[in-house]
Image (cartoon, rainbow, N blue to C red; front, top):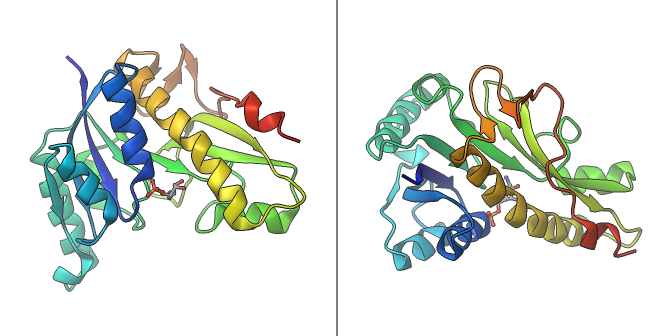
Length: 220
Ligand code: GRF
């Protein structure tokens, strides 16, 4: 049985597309049971509909209190009975009810090598800091902002000419390779989620370099 996932998006959904394409190629043993957004105009929803994937929107504006929105989002996602919830460009912080409902089963993709550069604008933070490598991280979501245990990382060289945009574009290429691989690894039991997630049998306390991307590293 493929791993049932629900993907949460707020925007373009290029990671969603990468996961779906990997599934279609037979490289990722998962099934996207639904795509849920906080924005009805998220372009990624249209891609999902074209693929015949159920979609729905739970807009923050529909609820006066954040906790009410969070509870509604939890209910909506739970309808699709995911084994794992994938935050792929979901631009809101999920709340206590959501975390409790899907405890240790929520993963996020972040455009930096956590624990460096959490929060917004990871690529801009990397450029401003003058680091020579950055990348992307897939991590388990906890109550903090980008603080949960890292499951895998992809490394990307930062070029002297990089702007936040050019770096983010290359980081996204890395994300598109990494995220489907992590989902497949969860599906096949090579990554075990839980309070102490394990990657290939080793506790994932420190960030695990699951996939370095030599094309990017050799590009300079
Ligand atoms: C990605 O860069 C991801 O790391 C960040 O938001 C972006 C989403 O892009 N959390 P997309 O919607 O998947 O194209």
